[in-house]
Image 1 (cartoon, rainbow, N blue to C red):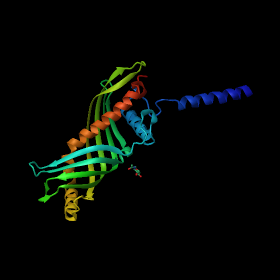
Image 2 (image 1 turned 90 degrees about the vertical axis):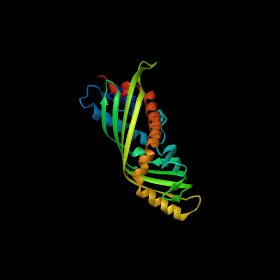
Image 3 (image 1 turned 120 degrees about the horizontal axis):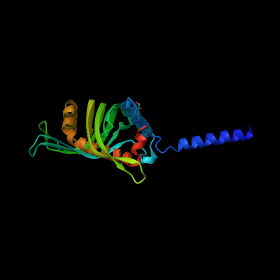
Image 4 (image 1 turned 90 degrees about the horizontal axis):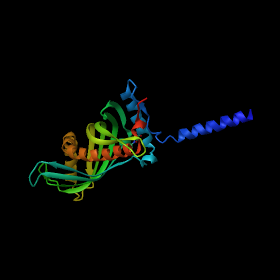
Length: 250
Ligand SMILES: *[C@@H]1O[C@H](CO)[C@@H](O)[C@H](O)[C@H]1NC(C)=O
């Protein structure tokens, strides 16, 4: 009896040890035989995001907040007096609160499309501007803040498999595309260097009444920056996690 108990304790310790040693605990493996593999991939990605919120040291992901972007350019109108703004040292909070709402996949050709929903992103930055906006000479700089609600992101990626030295396959990114929309935008500027409160009020009125238009103008550059971030983020995961941990052929 004693021996049997010792055996039980020993084997349960062993099992929990093996479990806690699962190197890919942040991935939920999906079977290629699963008739609804897209649903499984959606759950797996949400499982990854949930783990990311607490940090995944194995992937060098400590704290997902905030997301940093060095700078984004905005240009309205052309010519020497066209309005130009540069937003610098951008910090965006809230991206890790995202939910994956849909996944479409073609496992054979390693193509995946993810639809994400982020309830709210809050951003702050410094900006510098030059040129004329609404007949006002709007040269100067200051602080920018923005609140973006109801953010929908679609990301498409195509990958290929490479056999690693360890005998497992690893995915490499071949192509990545993304687009996004924002339902509600509120933003403003303050702390304008040249200390002109009339200019500040005019700018705030202008940017809030034209928020979607401004986002549209900023989108090409913003997308480029976001694609770089996504590329690094996804490549990091693909380099650390073998294909077989994501998708099993059993
Ligand atoms: C994430 O969502 C929760 C619940 O809505 C909220 O309290 C929290 O501030 C959000 N996190 C960030 C970084 O925005």
